[in-house]
Amino acid sequence: MGMRKNSKLKTQNSKLRSKIYHRRSNSSFTLIETMVVLAVLGLVLPALFAIVFLLLQQQTKVMRLHQVKKEGDFLLYSLTTTIKNRADAIYSDQGLTNIQCAKKDDSHTSPNGSNFYFKDKEGNWFNYFIDENKISSDSGYIDPPIILTSDKVMIEDFQISCQRTGIFSPPIVSLGFTISYSTSSTRSEETASLSYNNKIKLKSY
Image (tube, rainbow, N blue to C red; front, side):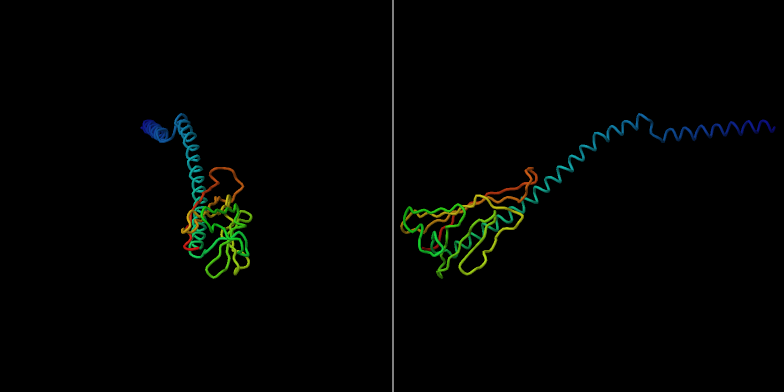
């Protein structure tokens, strides 16, 4: 009897070990499955990293373009509003002796604003000029000049001019500039640039 019991116990233990082994085998990855998973990850991960990198680049581009547009809009609005509301006449010198665009077909251009002065109705002069890639505002009652742009941007191709097309019509002031994000990088995702142009008809002369 004892021998039979021992034999049954051994048989039962053997079956139990076999079941446990099969369960473990069924619940674990085979070598081929592991290799397939690694291969899929090897294909997917680089694509995911590329997408994330592209999104970061686009975010940098958008942020810098936003900065450029914000300062460009402010600069154009500031110059346009002040010239339209305050300018009464245009001169080529600070002493307001050489009047410009006073007659029909007269024109006057300044590539950097240095010889383009406005006179307001109180007889004071004011002007805008570019210095070290920044736009500044100067006048007879403000010292020192006020810088209108931050260090984050730089101004290029600033030009201001006037033209008078009729005897009884006031002169038209044209101004333009290009504003860019200030960076030494040449990578497209790190640069941003916008060009602005506007024409302003003076109220009176």
